[in-house]
Length: 247
Image (tube, rainbow, N blue to C red):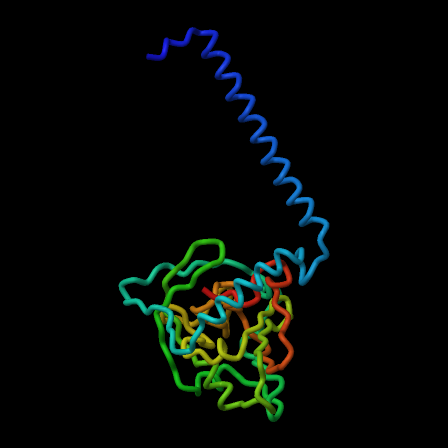
């Protein structure tokens, strides 16, 4: 039977534990600092260090492989609706004349500048879906608008593009979509939110509602849509986020 330790033995063991803990923490801190220093000294690619960009591109490939136009974001009941939250004013700072606003389509068979009435003339669709922010919060809202796929069908590109770019009128905010995401049946050009016309801070007169992507892709106040075979610039991808931004 082990004899009971006296206070000196206990004190000695505690000191040993403290010493080992300090050495372990110091080693962990050193490894963390070395990793941080390694990343800080790596060449940048699209706004961030290339190891981080490679990790994001791996996530992007996984999300893209999982994506299907037949796979829909869940739909909800009207009783599930939550208050529409205002988040993000990028591209909305400049004044806008809603009567003079036009949606310009670049890369189409002919020059196109559409009014909101032209958009409303396309088949009308409604959906109650979740808008998920990359910051971690989400809301459930009702969108009304035209499918981006219907607009592309009515105003087709000169040649089949790989991507669709969208920009605010002042080009202060811009996003890029792969063609499959643009043609997804839940990708809407929305002009109503919760059965009311869009307010300015929610993106009036026209915004993107794409529930299969995080909120950073749901561009407000669209001024230009461009068909392209060159992967478009994307505001947040240039600042270290995943270009695909799917979930």
